[in-house]
Image 1 (cartoon, rainbow, N blue to C red):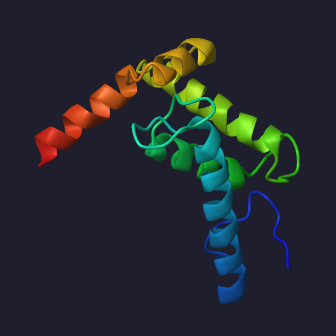
Image 2 (image 1 turned 90 degrees about the vertical axis):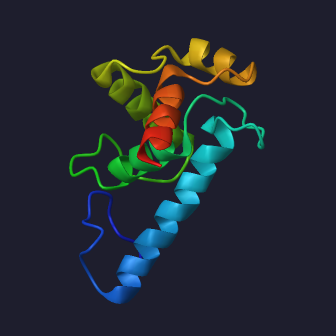
Length: 125
């Protein structure tokens, strides 16, 4: 059974909820393969943290007014990328130009957003 984009993660039967969770996890992993900045993994366009990717993927999957139906393809992945860059622009943190962010990631330079997250984690420990 497929569910439509924009459906609440809590709606439906237990099986439907599990299907949505599985779809979210698979889609998040797919996006991470392309965009995750990590010293341990090699992504094609490394520029975002795991949290940024997961938050943007969830927002995309649960969007009540999507611009196009969810297929889990490159168009959806690029929509996640665009959400990450838009949030960075709104918050005023992190590189908002995709090409510059990728160049920084490929050179092993964390974005301003990643540095901010690391600082917060140290403070909260």
